[in-house]
Length: 264
Image (cartoon, rainbow, N blue to C red; front, side, top):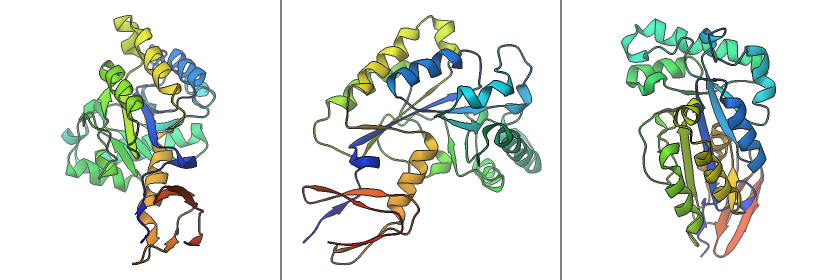
């Protein structure tokens, strides 16, 4: 009997890493340079209402800076959303999304909750504003995939990332793990510790088993895996999504392409 496990990432990679940084301050220039040097990808959350403020990246520079990464939202004015009336929650989400999409040139689907504050009502407002996945600041301390993408807990803040990166690359067998690191680039200036994120990227980029992805790429891939249909005898695999999916069957890594039905 075949044993099917959806424990692989794009290209059959064993594990995944994503980065998430807020506020779009000028320190992002240096952070993106470090990411690009190591082949690391990030999702960057932006407050469109803060354009023109000190140390905020000008809007005309954002699309070039974040090319190859992902632009997402952080609320128009970085307001603590649970304190707002429901209609203003939606405005903070929808209006920010509308402005960032004009700069990005693609559909913006992700966000991080300003000040890390959210509630069931905020989640509903974010969904109403077109958001599909949203990051909290409630660190999970584990490498598991999210159960609820609208309450997507990161693994750790970057201050703790070296130990998690070392743990991830030392794992010799387990697959399907996801390391999600978050923070603010200006913290590296404040704490004079840019070497921290450079060391994290050095550790991770040396592992060929890792898929470096944006939040959005992970959302699409994991959602595609979860939508894949398997027959009762594990011999027919149907992928109704628009994303190729890799999986384990016994000791093999196989791929079922987007829209394909695979017969084992």
